[in-house]
Length: 119
Image 1 (cartoon, rainbow, N blue to C red):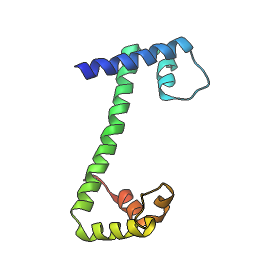
Image 2: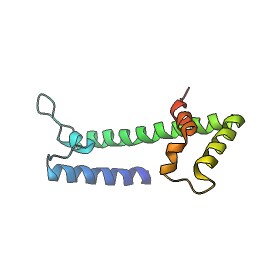
Image 3: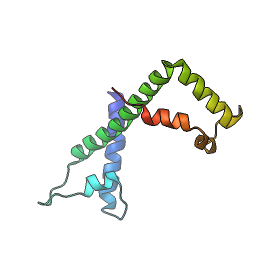
């Protein structure tokens, strides 16, 4: 309940700020939810905006965590894939810390991430 109260506090503060600023040229989800109107000129209440924002946040975390769980499961259950991924990583980094630039040299890892699907 404390976490929900904190989320509500943050979201409602941002909704209030967006309403105070008014429509602007920024294109973001919150502004669209706060200032959007249907063909009758009706908009969403603060509660409706809050519910939409929380749903979007939860959906973003849920899909990412689900994909990561299946990636760990897929790699963890395939010793040959683990060996090949380690060899690719070692070749790309030479044993040094992984850098963003080295990610281009990890095609097997990229393919493994791309092909990981939830059942």
